[in-house]
Image (cartoon, rainbow, N blue to C red):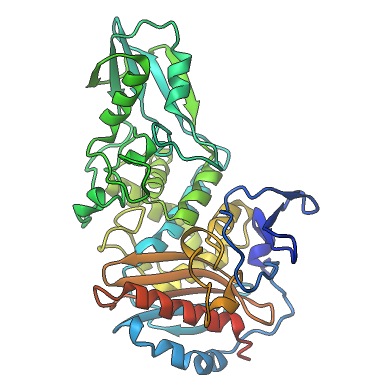
Length: 450
């Protein structure tokens, strides 16, 4: 029998009663609490249960029981005209209730689950991406992008994981005579905006043009919704030039065999996957999908990355008895309205990878209802507050689409994998759709449904 999904997570969440905060216990040392590595210090919701391994002897909900319990929630007007739903028993992989689960839907950011699985399958969890400065022609230094969008500049993020900083590169160049900064962003290729992406994604701060070299994910201020730079590589070069007190910045290439003058390392792949999922980070998703392509000797383009992710997931989909055509992604982030994914494929993907320890960062990276990431402000009031801490799921939002996919523990202790995707939502109806999806997930958490 497959192990319980949460029994293999790299991070087990324990919320101690009366502790005045959140404690975390690593799987390799479950007796010693550590400070929260990825979670924000949000106020505690109404209930703070222990998120523990699945109870193998807990009763499994029945399809009929789930259908009865969910009838009212699934009729909520906020869900719009089309809903795809798949609910599985995570321990056995048995399908319990599926409605339109084999219909391809636009997944929005729940597509990041597929990107995370591919990254953890083909990249080493401890792998880092090293940004370097190399010796160029006389008076030139070359800033070489390694596909680390978390590289910190003027607006470097603080907290966990600790990011590499442009200032550290500048410090290592002390004593080097520099007249020009050359930027080399050739690691990634092709179009910088994904198929079907809205031009407003960049100006609205949703994502930067995809580049192997950028600082602060191309943000132009500290605001989360800050517009992104139209040329992240040149902006990175300008910031390094300012630190070195030089004026000239040009695009070019690092000479073959050039000496490395300075280098900084990104967080590990495991940490980047966790951050991508918790924050729904589009820039990280696109970078990771390209690193998947590079590791498979494929082009680091949108098409190459999408093909590489699909190939990487192939054997897992086969193990889950899912036709590979059920997953057709055009980007790594889910920003493209052209992406297609069957809800049944995503739940089966979750159930299969949950039995393998290498995918622990995926499970621990899923936002916890009412506590962190994109679910930090949801599940805080009735009627969904009873599910706070019981739902760990990835959100997804595009015009006309609202989605929620992940894991939920029933009141009897049974762990379920689920995907709820409403892709017929009115253009101004996403908030109502989110509330309706949260109510569906809350029913799953509060239901025995046998």
